Image (cartoon, rainbow, N blue to C red):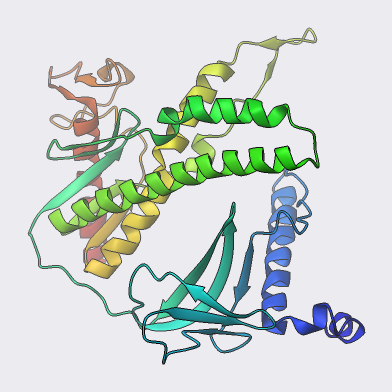
Length: 342
């Protein structure tokens, strides 16, 4: 890197050295993950080169090293950020900054630019104790079902925008590469996806905040969303053909799971629980939807449908997601007791 900067002082040499190092670390991380998957016998895609039009995020690892947050503190109304060889940029700050700014990233989404800050020494916003505990079951029909019978609606933001997205994608497919019309069509598709992402994140923050305010202990399933949404593997029939593998149905389920945003939900929930001083426990989800919460009998036949549960041993009938949430809560409390005893 030093040699490249010395040979190109008017180009690479004028940018922040620390920011370029952070970019190289991201590249090294991508190749490390690629070779790790190869070592495990998987067939990953080769890391894709990202040109100027695809590289959307630049990071400065330390405030003051090539960048400066609030670079004009004397300004009475506006916040500025200064980037090396770019200058001062005005920021529409949507909330006050807590703690000490550690890293600064500039991110492009379509035609919009964002400044993303990570902070140290952020004071905890501890909430008063409620004495309540809950297990939560993640789903598609209801985004979250709690062990005391509450259901949080799954808003299905992507499904609501599907028609507009399909129209925009068809319009994009008809455009010639390199044309100005195609640039506008790409921006239109990007705006729709960005709106869905913002809606999903906003709903996630509101739902997780309601859980954190209501419960001192929250137990959830340790879900591996990437594995759950993996494409159905083809099944050769031994005669140069393939057996039915329900790939179409699996694709629809994968789309619904990703639209629900389980991974984002659990990540935000973990952050809010830590800030509020709540206890969050993750448990193995195996068989939580098959075990009867009353007698403990486990059988596939207990789950009659997506919403109905009836135990074949004791006859206990309830909502299937509520039954699973109760099992999740009990498993979490058992883990906590075992850890306390150790």
